[in-house]
Length: 327
Image (cartoon, rainbow, N blue to C red; front, side, top):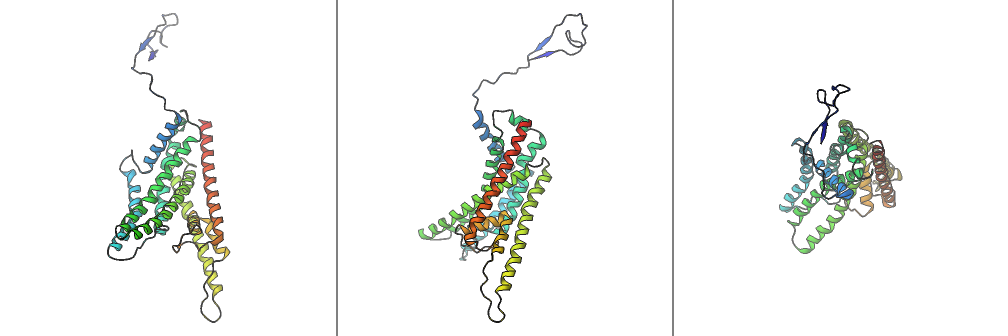
């Protein structure tokens, strides 16, 4: 319903002061919503589902789906190659716990750098946060929904290649014992994938939420992961070379090098080396390309990883709590 008070209409601004003050009421056909009010929980669920779909480009044009599709296909490629090799009688090429470490680091860095801003930066730049917070949700519900959605998206990226690897492996083995051995090896790999997803989602969403400019957000996330990983790898290589040099006797065979404390500490500077250290500390047996076996120092890796995750989540929730107060 609306009242027309335009100039030239009796009662409008163009009418004389002493004239009849009348109005024209137009029925625009609007009706009040008298259906069920589903409340806060359903709002969170709807926002989580919408954000999960947005992480893979659903609901948008074909260009938005190119990067997620290429990323997951690239991650599945080692599993497909492994299945083909095993069908030719070769041994298993890819392990569940480390998968293909270099490829996984590269692809997941690209994925979170490109898709995390899609979930949070776009809303900041479009200034639609007041619309979200005008609904019956709390200030923490918005970042919670985004975090759950992006963690689930990262889980898809991490776990689908492992399931493809598992399917290809059991298709080429015979006997219940061999299938059970593959299943036991898969479970730690899935747990490591969960660890990656929980941490990567927290870090990338926090960094992406610092700016509404998507290009800046993507650059910030990518630079953080690549720079910290490069720093950790340089320190690890330098310290490892020092260990080898000190293990070299003046005359005689080379003694087996033992990882030094400095070499183990070098792995604390990147989330990816932290993942590797925690995985090996919890019983991973696959030789690592990133850090030496941490031994008792593995608890420090786990504590640092938990601290980073909690700090990023606290920063994410604090930022949107302030946004809600400003709305």
